[in-house]
Length: 506
Ligand code: CS2
Image (cartoon, rainbow, N blue to C red; front, side, top):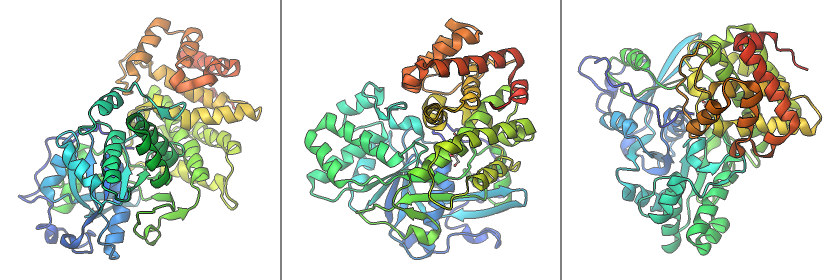
């Protein structure tokens, strides 16, 4: 998932004197697909919080298809919660941007027009609250990354001591967090006797809709019992499974896309051919005909969400930590070493017995397709990018599977090695002693634990396992302690490459 820490490359090529914009669309080469509708007749129906690369390569493309099919009251207004970079890049180009789909077969460019405007929450919180409170806004979708939910990852409950939550309780009209914005806008709607909007979480959390619902209600309850009750009764929080690999856009991407366009696109997105969106069908305030654009509408997304988190995201994180430690810059380069590919397959195989899937789901075929997607060398998906925010990702990607496997009496050695890779990574020193730029809300705390423990698996593994917000009770389970300590011992002794090479599943 794209993060708001992503920086837009500043200097870039100038393609003639032209910049992608409504006026210049007819100068784009004919082969490049562009909005097949009159953008001036589109009105916003969706506000999206966290308009990063992932949203622009996924949901906004679906909406672009629906607008072309005539659903013209479902345009998107995006908001960044912190950084002005996306707005600064998109505003001069009427929020048009290119989606570059890359694979071994080449690149397919498409210009997307579904984003009608882009706001920066911190600059004008009042404007965003007004937009959310406007009855025309019927869906508020979110990709604010795991840490954007201000919760304790292990329990899924609101972290009432989170600085943004503390701030938003005291300053309801100038919130900082997504939860703060949602609750203030919902309170306005309740006071005005209006219907609420539907909240559509598109982040990689388990039961993302339910989780968002719990957090919004818990926060509202801190403000007013009556508001919390109204939210419980009236607001829908459908869960969704979202899937598309979208690496952060680089300066080189911007240059190649601009050259294909013959004009500058300051902020294109680069992605893979695969895209999937599964959505629970609960939209009391209305919705576009998602299915017409290939979205799977279901009554319960849980099995698909677990499948994706435990197969795709789990093996992604495993490859990210261990691959980074072994000196691989990207996932595709890590996958060229067949031992890493075999390890990723094992992570998926070990997750399979913990999943209960609808009849007809072929987990082996799904896993094989994931391995292929990870090997897409046309994507420069950095291990460092995926390694970000591990403290927020581990519980739903790796630890839930370990808990289930322990319950089933199965070995947890494969996942223990992935967790040990994370532990070695958050020491902030790689195997050559070079600094690792660890990005994680708990980076400081984890680093201090690592400093106190020193480079000793016997000390480091139990110390990190005590971080309750990540590991909960699993951290004190002797089977967990033994498996992780053993894996970390090997990592220290042999290094990541060799440890993975000698890895034999039990
Ligand atoms: C990745 C995901 O950055 C990460 O943690 O595992 O963003 C992954 O690429 C997407 O979930 C794929 O759908």
